[in-house]
Length: 275
Image (cartoon, rainbow, N blue to C red; front, side, top):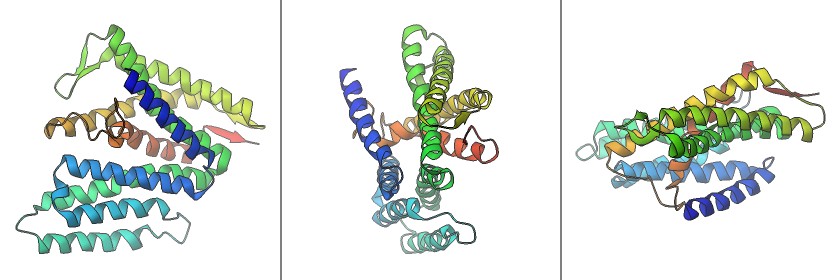
């Protein structure tokens, strides 16, 4: 537990530094680093990294995507992704005796899904600006981590009924409920803090209260999805870069689901405004 808490403190300190430079390219660089490490961890867990060409190409695209701007009439993402698809098939043609097509498909999915999901943080900043974008990002991270923390402690304290015993034996229905409640309370507190700190800020608490359980449930789905991959490949964690927590992908698996969820929701239903 001490190791887990120490790792969390260090991680939060790094996060605070990155968020203090939220308005700069430091955010893009941080997202790129996280995406590359997460992609590498997944490739290592699934043995895709044995094909060095796939490993290098997958990590390269993960590093580039957070720096691709989103602008009307100038969407550069297809310019990068379409040649990437071609290169993947070139690798398949060159190494078809040792590379199953399933590895190509998995490489394509993971090397795009992880950086695109994490890049939602950049899109929030570029679309909504410093204050509102940062608020939405904190809600996204909180939606995953508040839920995870609540589920962990409530599950340890009173958890009896297994949620998914084959996929993740330690998760319980009591933990799920605890995670939802903790997530709801914490996100409402974040909303109140936003109003107190930002002049003219106005939070739609009803929308926020409805968003919190959705974020909590989606974070659990993300966590279980990662656990299923680990279960099928016979590993406990994706890495050990964060002692007590595992790898980067272990820490961000639920964020990968919650971040694009909130990015999509606020497009049509603003959670907050600044007058």
